[in-house]
Structures are given as C-alpha cells and as structure tokens.
Length: 220
Image (cartoon, rainbow, N blue to C red; front, side, top):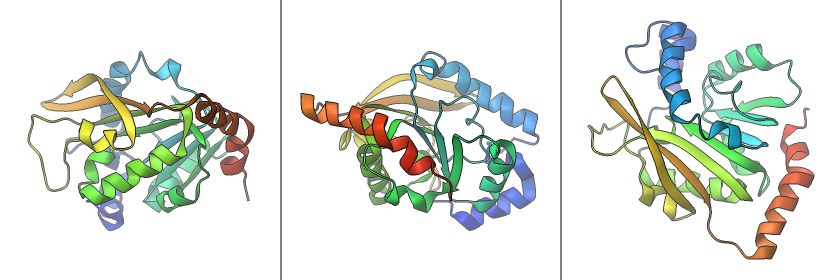
C-alpha cells in the first residue's frame, strides 16, 4: 500500500494534482478525471445526507459536492494543508489525519464516501479493518458510496480491485454501476448496514441526528 512517504514525494513532484492517475499533468486534468466519476454517481449524490465522512479526501476534490457537516480524513499532511486553505473558513467542514478514524464515535455518519482509496489498501487484513470501522461509524440507515478499482482488469501490487467479498462481511453491498475512462474501470458500490431490528435502526438514526455532528465537528 502506498504510504505517507509515497504520497508526500508525489505531492512534491506534481503538486495539487498529484492524487490523479499517472497521466495527470495539471489541475484541469485532475478535474476532467473527476468529472467521469461525477457523471457516474450523479444519481446518488443528491441522495446523500450529512454528516459525511470523506475517507481518503486527498486535496479535497469532493468536498464541494458532499453534504454537510463534512469531515475529510487523509494520511498526508500536505493534502490536508491544501484542503484547509480551500475550505478552512467553512464552519461545518473539517479535515483531520486518517489516524483519527478509530477515535470517532459509533454511528457518527449518515454517509461515508471513498473514491479510489480502498483500492490502494491492498493488504486484506487492513482492508477488512477499515470496513469494520466503516460499519461501526455508519448510522443505522446510513450509506457507503464507494468508487474503486474493478475486477476483470490488470491488478497491481499497489492497486487491487475492491469486491463484494471485501464489503459483505460488515455491510450489505450492491454494485450499482461502473466508470470507464482511458482503459481503466472502476466499480460504484452502494453499501448499507445489514438488517437491523426496529430499535437498532431507531437508535442509529437518533444518534446521528442528536449528537454525531457536534461530537466530531467541534473545533478545538
């Protein structure tokens, strides 16, 4: 899995557009790349509800599209500096290091979003650990929207497909589409909590509406 050093060196070389694919040379290229995904999830974006966790937020490509309150997590401090420069004046937007994930309260988010992030977590145990955290953090009626490297194409030691089996141990997942761009293919996943009892679902909704936003959006 690419580590902090990898992304820091890439950022030093390529700047703000370093989170794009290999042929990305400018921020315009990065936005063109993002628009392929925007069109692919156009049906789903309006249905998302805050609070939202953008896991692996990079340089904040999706912060303007996702609902509020918004929390972006990333492992690279340089990425977070870019995000804060863009959105730091918005009271309902916050950016933190990815290590914060395990300290967030249960049921904090109505939406968890990832785009080309889980595909780089190639170690199976680590990918499962992240999915377990997602299940813990997602509210009873919350939604995971994830766009990740698809099966049926070349796999790499730094990028591997995210499959239903990766998700289904903790969440009920459905493939709802694919995004194809320049010979690459990414799967769009929608995942939700497995069937809960009435009171379990009620408790998840109650938590998310009453206390989740305040607990993780509070500024020091």
